[in-house]
Image 1: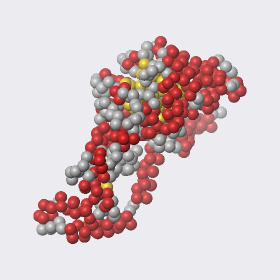
Image 2: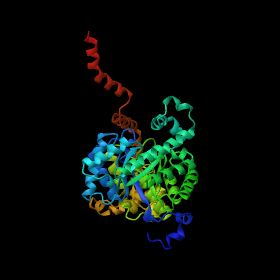
Image 3: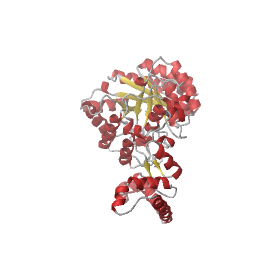
Image 4: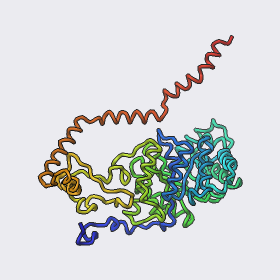
Amino acid sequence: MELREPIERLIRDPKEFTRAVSFPDPSQIRIYDETLRDGEQMPGVCYTPSQKLEIARALAAIGVHVMSVGFPAASEGDRRTLQLVMAAKRRGELGDVEIVVMCRSNRNDIDVTINTLREAGIGPNEVTFFIFTSGSDLHLKYKIGKTLLRFEGRDERDWLDLPLDFFRDANIRLQCDAIRHARERGVERVEFGAEDGSRGDVDYFIHYFKAGLEAGGLRPAWPDTVGTLTPEATRWYCTRIVEALPEGLPIVAHLHNDYGLGTINAITATACGFKVVSVTANGYGERAGNVKLHEYVVALRVLYGLEIPGFKYHKLRELARFMERMSGIPMQQHEPIVGSKVFAHESGIHTHAILIDHRMYEAVPADLVGAETSFIFGKHSGVALVEDTLRNQRARLQRAGIEPTNELAHRVTDEIKRLREERAASSKSEEAIELYEEAMRSLSLDAEDVVAIALALGAPQAAAAATSP
């Protein structure tokens, strides 16, 4: 049906309430995808290097600007991934996407990564190195405290008695030493950050960032490692960080979704002037995951009117299905934007209205994200949708000698409701869920698996020891 009045006269545009929110120029905003690193830290998820290459191609095709490919110093698999991805980039398969590798703040991690690149004929200047440490006092003293003591040449027995200021200062020296070492070895682009920023002291982080920039770092990263930020806290921290650092500096917001606030916190950080936002496809990641790529880009476009240049919004649902197949982790069917049934309708009241205009009950434009409105028939179906469906199939029905009348539509509707309830009574949903949970458990190794491996590997040695004189 064609509406007689402009849509703006009939419903309020959500942008009416967000127009006053200012953002960096859209051309300066960078989507920083961490699917291959943080996304793989989700329990049960593991990708082979060849699978990571496929994922990298899909992410580059949809339009992400920056891509983290893992932690080369930590595993042979990540080293092989780096080589495959860089070879693909050289062949032009990934466009101009920026490739990031992760290193702890120690010279060995940096050297291993540089050697991995050089073995593949790739210079360290072709990759961005993300060199990280810790940031909150909890992490500084009790997680990496002994590392800092060793770096400073102090006795580890001093650990618990030293004041927090010692660990703060040593941490900055450790970070700057690693940055300078990377730059001396030919790395041109260094991103640097410290875990648990959202629970750290903002003045310390500003000091830490300034020292890292002076040492040769180019892009500070500020993380909400355990997802405790609220939009109010995000604004408080991010405003202070942006105001204290050089104007126009690209700063990374790395946020987690433990309270389901990842998207709004990412939007808030962007509005405060953070130009680089870390996301993962389908929001995969440890615990409750990371900022969801699909939520961040679509909410920015539809609710705030900010379009990321060159981003292919219509590929989002295709990417979601692809990632489900690659990871083995399905999204919930009503996941915003990319859920398999998020554009499906069953309720009679809703379907009747959708037949008039889809905007009655769909605020996300289906065509924007590569979706189509569909209808599900069941207990809540109304006669209007059934009648419309029969009318659309009139030719087929008439070939069978059946006329799609209103009376037939009522009878069909009654039968649909009866069948749906009958199927509900014989549903195997509980069995299906148990099978799914078992399949998820089988992807991971638990403590029993660890003991079984130890028994198997240690048995020959134990037997030899038992028989020796």
